[in-house]
Length: 80
Image (cartoon, rainbow, N blue to C red; front, side, top):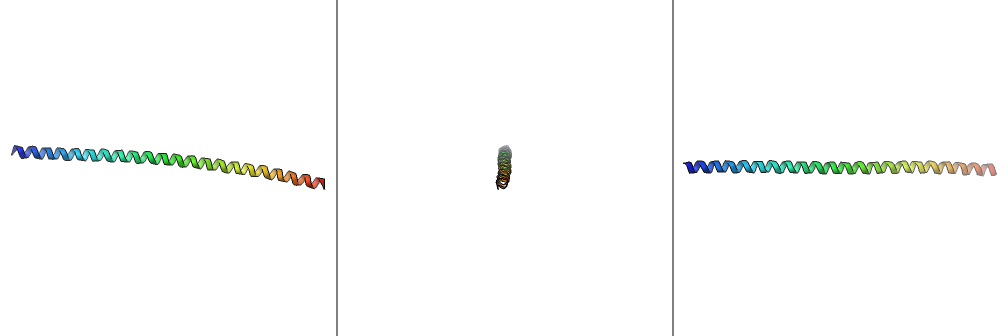
């Protein structure tokens, strides 16, 4: 009977080790997924910042063109 008890204890120990390995694998996968999500969010934030800067540059260029166009029209009107 002690052989059966030893086998049962060994089976329980193997089952506990398998469960512990599964928990560690799950935690590792969760940490990896979180890190990937953080990296993707950082990349999205950087892209958003670049888009905002590009929009600001476009507005500044438009304003500059509009002022230059207004000056040119004013000069043309003065010359006539």
